Structure formats: C-alpha cells, structure tokens
Image (cartoon, rainbow, N blue to C red):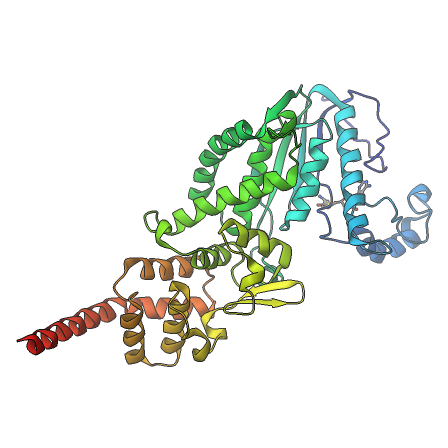
Length: 416
Ligand SMILES: C[S@@+](CC[C@H](N)C(=O)[O-])C[C@H]1O[C@@H](n2cnc3c(N)ncnc32)[C@H](O)[C@@H]1O
C-alpha cells in the first residue's frame, strides 16, 4: 500500500516563516504584484461570511473583525505617501525573499512568479531579490492572463507573468558594469530572438527581457561602475529598455531602414508595439521616449503626444484634424496626414501630400505604415485606416510615377 501523505497547511506572514533553516527542497511563491490588487480588502467580502459559517471551526483564522491588513505586502497609499508605500513594499518583499533563502535547503529550488507593467514595480522586485541572497538562474514568461480581459485594451495589461527559478548559491564578488553589460547583451540577444519567434510582444516582451537580465546581473554580490558607484535596478532597467527598443524597432521594420528614421517616428512605432492605444503613466512613457532619443516633456501637447494629468496618450490619425497634421514633413506626421485624408475620402489630396513631402516613393514610408498596422489589434480604427490605405498602395505608386513622368515631359517641352 502506498503511504498516504497528508499535507499540512499553516498560515503566517511570509516575512517570518515558522520553519527552521535549510528545511524545504522547494519553495513556490506568487507574491503580490506591487500595487496591482488590494487582496485584503477584496477578501473582506468573503471573510465576513466565512467567519459566520466556519469561524467556530477555525477560531485562530477569524480572530479579527475584518482581514488583518498591516502586514500585507502591497504598495497602498492608504495613510502613507507614495514613497513610503514603495519603501514598505520593497522592504517586506525583501524580508520574504530572505526568509525563503533561510528555509531553503542548500541545493533547493525556489520559484517566484511576478508581473508588473510599470518600471517602479520591477525596480522594487529586482532590488528585493538582489538583497535576499537568492540567485536567479532562469526566467520564463508564462501566458497566464486572459486576452479579452475588460481592462486589457485601455490599460495595456500584460498577458504573461515571469516565472523565476532561484537558488541558494555563492555569488561572485564584484561585477564591473561595463563587463556585466556585455555579458547581459550576449545573453539577452539569444533570448530576445527566441521570444520574438514565439510571438511574445509589447510590454510582455519587455518584462521577459528584464527577467533574463536579472539572470546575469544577480550573479554578482554587487555591480559597480569605474567611478565606484553601485549599480542598482534603475540603471539596469534603463539599459535593458534601450536594448529591447533597438532590437524591436529593427525587427518591426525588418532591418535595413531603422537607421533612416527620426526619433519621433521610432517612438511612435515602439509605443504602438508596447502599449497599443492605452494611456500610460508619465514615468514609463518618459522612459520609453528616452530609449528612442526623445525628450517627452518637450514634445507633448504639440502633436500626437498628449498629456492628461499624470498620463500620456499617443493619438492615432482618427483622433487628429487636418490642420494639425498638415504642418510637418516628419514621416509619422505625413502618414497621419495621409490617413486623415483617406478617412475623408480625399484621394487626390493624398497623392499631392505624398508627392510634395517626398515620402510617396520611399519604401520606408510604407514599411512604417505596415509595421504600425501589425502592432494593432484587429478592431483598432487606426489599423483599419492603415490597412485601407496600404491596400491602395500600388495604385498610388503607379499614379505618382505617371505624374512624375508627365512633369518630366512638361519640363522637357519647356526646355526645347
Ligand atoms: C498574486 S497573489 C497570489 C494569488 C495566488 N497565486 C492564487 O492564485 O490565488 C498574492 C497573495 O499574497 C498575499 N500576501 C500579501 N502579503 C502577505 C504576507 N505578508 N504574507 C503572506 N501572504 C501575503 C495576498 O493576500 C495574496 O493572496
């Protein structure tokens, strides 16, 4: 007969586990994701009913009128400033990871799940992990969220979570940032390629790359630059973002023309790929802009970048009017101009804009239009305009070359 193993469930805060050192072969944890979900407040809904129905069977679990909240590791701003909330989260997550390190056997494995779309959410996780003694040896994005979630479109939600495998190992002492960057580059490019072919995109792609970078960065006790500054998560994230930006723009445009494009056009493509049509917190928008060489503050509320309180939105052609887009010869503005005209059925004006701007016979123009279309979901109004315009591309090109031919003939007539 097989031995019956009865699982034992205990309840305690993850910051002080009631187990001796070196006790577990495996620890699996799915900690709170920064400020994403107010679990304890949600639990109150069930707690009051459970307390009345099974409370007498488990009195130790129902001793308080509502769920206990003070030890909950979530970045809430209730009665605290944002900075305090962030520090509380980071400090307590670190304590929980240190506890995992303590209770794990020397050759044990810990798996930690995490997801967050903001840079601040990742900064805290990375710093907590680095300070815990655990070493991340692998990381993989796992598709855990439903695609059609109601919040998914407006808020650019993630489709995946990152699963980290961490171990209790000796760290290398000091890593020099320049060498570590090279090591991350070599490691990450292979992973970026693989994830790209597996169809991971946008914000999910960024977080998968962050996961991979920690596999290298976290091997060192500390990482320093040559001036003696200790490099923490904020710098690492800037570096990873630059690398992913560069890789993604080149892939989206199928190489070749990325170098010809202005920062503003690159920013637009990358934004659509990362966030589609969602509004995004200023801080994350600024970082994405920076990685394409744009100073967001000097661009917003001039053209397609709109700031509304602490959020940034990138307007599509259907949200702009003709007067606004006619002013510029920048590729992305000319594309918007053309798409506004397409929407209004002004086909002749489109040819004129393409001719006068000089973009009409340039491959880059149509490749950018195609790349943007590929980043958008099928119901997007912008995608429909782009696809409509692109379906008439051959006709436009032949009309433009016929017009150019006529002009040449006119010119020759005038010359002779
Ligand atoms: C991302 S959720 C995990 C959800 C879980 N995987 C599931 O499918 O139900 C994070 C959980 O951590 C719990 N939590 C928050 N602070 C904690 C603490 N100090 N100790 C233990 N658990 C905590 C939250 O209440 C929440 O249930």
